[in-house]
Length: 122
Image (cartoon, rainbow, N blue to C red; front, side, top):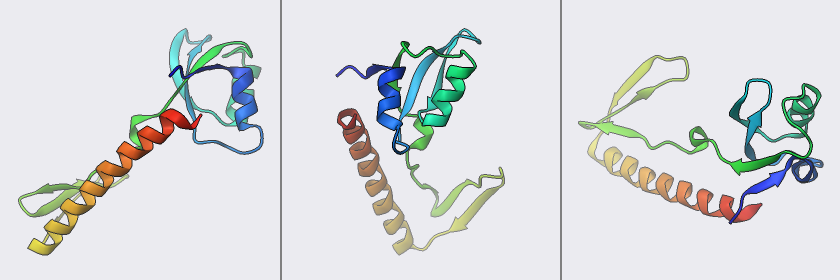
């Protein structure tokens, strides 16, 4: 499936409401490929700044960080980092470890389904 459309077509997709679409486009000012969230405001801003052209082809894509991340378990401890950069570590009981493993299976399946539906959604 070809995920390329023009900016003009993309504006038609997002005119009424924001869609959860990210696009890969060629940034004319910085002369490099870039990724942006494709809402009407972002597109108009980039058109006004001549970063993109209405007839440019863009590739519909998805940012990797938008996926749900699995919970990390290490020696019956759940470990990770908060958004502010500080880390955490909590001891888990055996039933909690089983529950976290099941949650990770569900997260894996959700990410798989999201990728599948994203391919055929637009």
